[in-house]
Image (cartoon, rainbow, N blue to C red; front, side, top):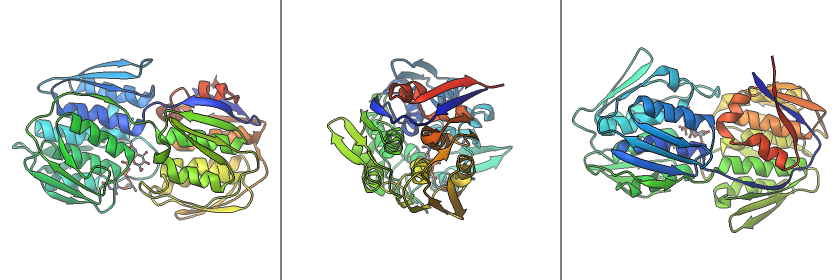
Length: 421
Ligand code: UD1
């Protein structure tokens, strides 16, 4: 087993370069299933989840070539891919569910195990299922699998999502591009990763209007063609570096970032006392004082991203004053607070609220990452804690942050990966 050993105290100073977004690239890889032939995806982050998705696609019959160093994935999709995604891969990564839409759309059937993945609370699939049913699929659940069937193809429909779910928007979208007629997705998610997948689908020949708005209109086409697409930069990794600069009193330039995808988070850092400078290809965050506490309310994009909530709780834990953090997407995300408390943080939770009272110092301790972003939050807290913090569960961090330790070290952090018995 491996862990990260973090010795706190050093301000992070220097430059990092982003790669593509995990939450986009996995869906882009699934979208490749919609067209026979070879699709190329670039700016691919070197993370474990990409490998898991590559393996899933191989088991569906695709040939997948992953040049991890070059950040390129080439997926050659056969005329008749299999439509069955087994539990042993799906359980390792919840995002596997994103093959559901493309498989029903292209093959008229999908048999996908119900995913596991993050330990961040129960996440329903009801909106994915409802959406496909509205488009004429028959969906049943048996032996831990979702079986979706539309032997004569999906049919365009009006789909109103109860909540702008990222995953459900993607499932319906990828079903709709090959459906007969027009599909309207109301209350659709507007995340930059949704825009990215729409852009790729359009380059494959899909007809989509309202991209980036809450109403997406898709005119189904008969076939799509393979494409060559560059993944949008990872705004959550960018935001993590921004908080790293602010929490350590450092000065970090993030290159290859789209600052406009992070407006609220960067604005919160300004309120906390940081200087944020927009650059042509990214941004720079510097902090020269103890941060001030900032309230956070997580919401679907363009609201504050839930995936940056643990990092901001870490920031508030060492800020002057008290902050109220409201989590509206994944309540169980607060389980990480118990780990942060081991470092001496003063956080009280009640339902979907957390009250964080800032402390002047935290003190290093062994802690366990419970999901990707909790892991990032704990590492950030470790960077400002006295002494040594050992973060276990490093596999979670590896799922979302490519080359995290070398990048931290290049900024001056005292961090190493260690083997633990
Ligand atoms: C994606 C991201 C995740 C991010 C989240 C919200 C990926 C791989 N993951 O997750 O990092 O935190 O968006 O920005 O892209 N829900 C239902 N029924 C459904 C679908 C969702 O009740 O059918 C609920 C979930 O339980 C959750 C909320 O909707 O409370 C948001 O989920 P959703 O937006 O779908 O997130 P994911 O796509 O799973």
